[in-house]
Image 1 (cartoon, one colour):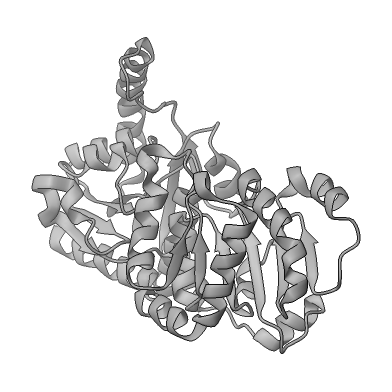
Image 2 (cartoon, one colour):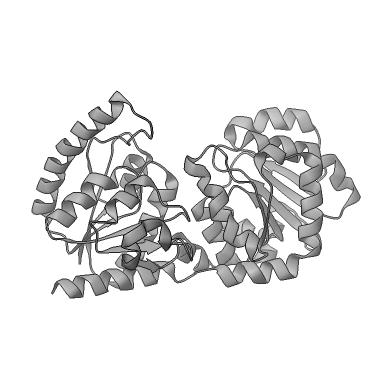
Length: 364
């Protein structure tokens, strides 16, 4: 199997692509070529993963009238020429995009050249690039139930798959007792894990700092992942803390300790939600208000509606509000966990590869 993969800009587009590639490699002999940009995260992450990488120069469209969009148009056409050569040289069986503006010229060109094509949409609300590509590609794989209508007349091309990142988390061998012991947390205490992404989220950090004095009235433990940039400042603010409250700037193997937790407080990026539902974790979601079309709040809606999560908008976030939500979530942990697990799609990577193989067989 020969496959070209494209996706970039953020980890939310790159890590599902890598999860899919690893599943393909696990199941069949394959050759992979990844097409991204040199200034995106994918240039480093994909190369570090040992996957052959080629770059094109492309930028995203502005949503308002701008001369930059004229420049983007020229870059698009130039990229089409380069992608055409890369595809002719590699001769893939299928071309897959996982989001980000880099996918635009890659999937467009592949579809026009007659290659089988699929785009994977991680969010409930699709990005502008994937909506554009939907008219050209053979299949659109969805991560959230009910989001197909956003593709309009191309809804018939959609298939619900889930996020491949969920499958990697599902396969982890995790002993919750052992993970708590690593951090020195007592087993009988409910563990709350807070994180706002790799760089941290100032608004979430501020609310947690405000909430911490209230924890003296509870028997909860807290693992507070602040983000590298904010760690020293928050450490100074809080001073000496009891053992059941711990600060970390960053955790590389976060899913391991998540499995040992009873509640998670986080943003509502697509990969985060895939992890939470695969592990069946209750959560308090604080969507980032700084993302396109407020898509994180849309992502969160399915978890909130089914009772798997509570939602607090950043504009309404305070220490008191967060503490009250924690109290409610801990009290309803069993029902929230059940609702969360019901939304999980732990076989997403395998199902996605199945769909790729079906498309390739149609070609033959």
